[in-house]
Image (cartoon, rainbow, N blue to C red; front, side, top):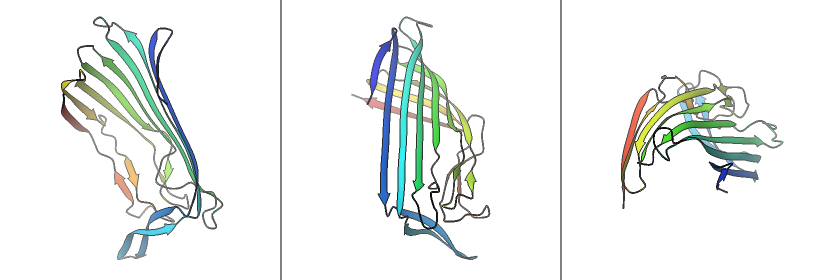
Length: 206
């Protein structure tokens, strides 16, 4: 559902999406340490019964108008994702959380948009709560927050382009993990996030 309307004369966008499912024999790809010299990176196993529920919601509001020129706007946009993924009465793992996915993830931005196509503004990506790397729920991935800034030009037709500086504070963080049954901190499981970087792109639309 995507709702776009004016609330008290202020342009506003809102979209909510929800999901809920019970799964039997969900496949898991688990890393297994066979011996000190060999690790199998993906052993397929069935997880029995698992429960998945979650919500994704986004909202945007143009809280300033005609700042520098007629009909320009400053938007506040927010996207939030919540996921609750668990084993269900598993013989080994009980009702532990499924590893590898954060329960909460948020992205927020303040974006200036000019009617001539120019836009610019900062945005923040925030994982506020740790998540688990293993079925046993013994090893967690630390929370993190990233600061980015984007500048671009887009009129909806013809040429458009953008430049974005990401992780401007050069935060060191773990972006994802390989999942295992029971982990320990010495295992090579973690994928580091990208440091400070600049991305850009151009596009042409007829």
